[in-house]
Image (cartoon, rainbow, N blue to C red; front, side, top):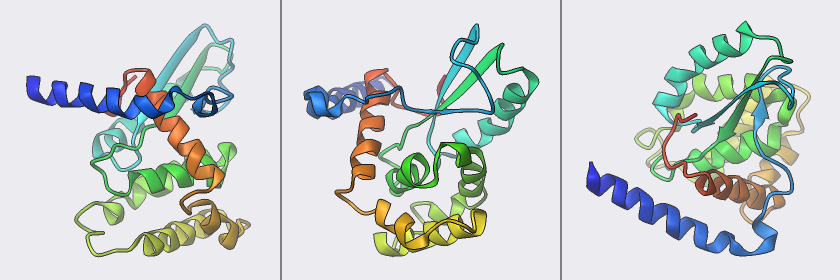
Length: 185
C-alpha cells in the first residue's frame, strides 16, 4: 500500500511539472454541474470521476440520487473528469465528454459512456486503433445526440487540437487538487 501511495505521489509531482506555465492555467473552474446547482449554493460537492473506472460507474447512481434530492439553490454537485492513465482510453473518453459534446449534454453522455464502458476497457480494445475508438465514440455521440455533426466531433478528438489541450488542463487541475484516484469527492 505504501509503495502505491509513493508511486502516486511521484506521478502527481511529475505530471504537474509541465503545468507551471501560464498557458496551462484553466481560465474557468472546469467541471460539469449536475442539474441546476447554483455556484452560491451553501452545500457544494465536487466529485472526481473517470469515465472508464468501474468504481466511478458504481458510485454514479448514488451521486445522481443525491443530486436529485436537493434544489439547486441548496446543493451543487459538480463532476470533474479525471482520466486515469491506467485506463488506456480514458483520456479520449474525457476529451469527448469535456469538449466535444457540451456542458448541457454531460449527464446523457456520461450515461452513454457508462452503458458502453466495457467496450472501451483495456482488454476489449487491445488491438483497436485510436482512429477506431474515435469512430466508435462518434457513433455513440450521433446515436445519443442525432443533431451532432459527426465530422466536427471526430475532429475535436484528434491530438493537438484546442480540445486536446483543454483536456490536459483539466487533468492538471485535478492533479493540482491532489486527486490521483476516482471516484473521489
